Length: 139
Image: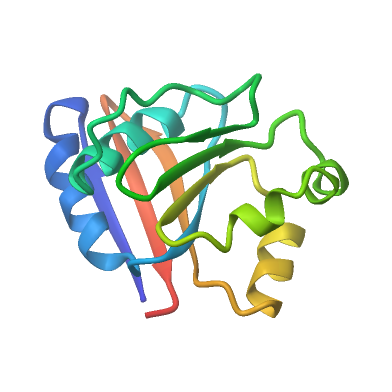
């Protein structure tokens, strides 16, 4: 299923609720977009929609942040797939909940799909004071 949702920062919570309803309960969610496109901002909104009370921050330097309510957030910008696998992070994706992955590439997406993971992709594109969220799920 593919759906495109447009939202500004002011109504991002409404968009996050729509996206949350589309996503499987347990999934690896790839967030794709250019630098400063709003990947971490969307992660914050999705975490809130899922009932997470933790303060969501970018895992740029830590690679992984784990929050309450089954939310984990990864930033693979400086972490090639080999390093990700060597660190044992593939196993962490087996934990129940949502695993939001910034900068995950298509090779990792293909690997996860081949191992039976529920995978969703959200492409974020800026558009005149708002963002377009193209949400693709297998459901």
